[in-house]
Length: 302
Image (cartoon, rainbow, N blue to C red; front, side, top):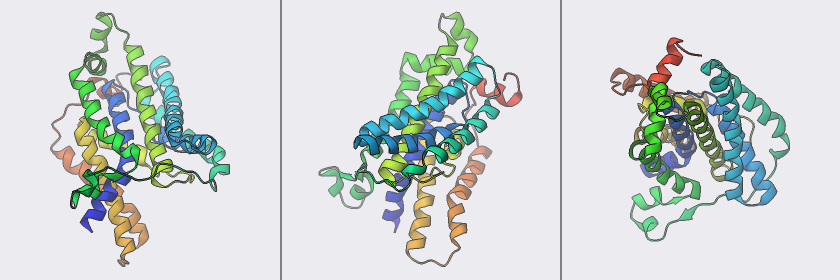
């Protein structure tokens, strides 16, 4: 049972992991994007549709990422170029994404695809107990294994990462250094949306092999919350994403074993556990919010 839950944690949590890495990059640059939910669901439909048309899930993943990036581009334009309120813009784009995908996704509800299937890593998947948990997944899950250390290296070991974090703290310093904070923020928000779109694609093209209206079910919002849970640290965000995925896997395991609990209570379980984790971490929060984000909540800027 524990192995089933851990395996399910990785399968269910990967889509959230992609979105949380994207949101982390965006917030490190000083832009909070609650429209991540809209980018995810746009990526889920875009990736599924492109896979239907081309028969290639990798091109589908690229298409899903582009759809997520386009949704986030609108957010970037509104908050960076037009100085709109970041929270209001993000929430509006979230509902726009849900509405657009519900409209354009009607013809794909009954479509079938040849999406990403499970790939067993030779030798590693044969390791007793831990092998099936870690090395029997779809290709996008394996890519996510590399994504987390990649984001950490980008933020903490590269010049680009230093500039990105500086924009999120004191953009006037970056401007004085001869670099455009506006350009850096645009790139961060669009990159974050691209990753959220790939996360949505993992959900539709790898995890479920289907498209259903509103299939992200709040995962984008959870991803945004997990970034705070993680104190803007990639590896802690990964743990949060797998915690959410584990709660979803536990829900399915309990249902499959016929445990007499209301399905509505089980459906709430992943979100309740995520809230509990946020509560516990916030009590001991030592990470420092990027100064650019604190201005959003205090109203110092739009």
